[in-house]
View 1 (cartoon, one colour):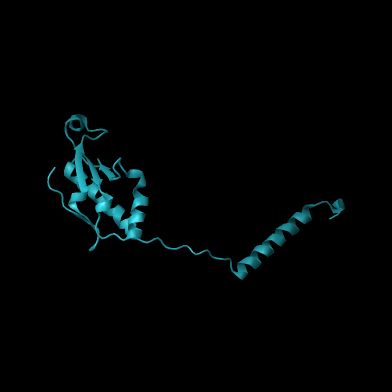
View 2: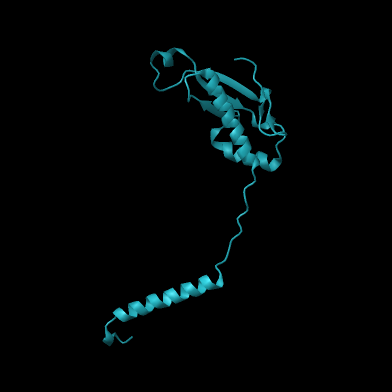
Length: 145
């Protein structure tokens, strides 16, 4: 295929062209004769180690996000056969890579465990008491409660 250009994720983070390898293969699914003769499905492989400008934490998040999509050489494998046009599928695959790297850049929010407030605790206890009283009211008087 033609010369690839880098995928720019942010101002400082980019996937250089030499980290990308593209193959066009025949797509599966409907398409009649077209699907049998035109290689429109795009198979894009990305060398994760060559991505520029990634912090270590972001690199670790990216590795976690991609762990199910790695090939034997540890490269990220992205395919697209959404359209019947090879160029559009290539753009779609590149967008998928860009979105994955962008997702790895976002730091997850830290979850701080919260405790129920005093009013909520009071309400819970009073509801339990009411439920118990209701059940007690259902018992036969001679049960010795």
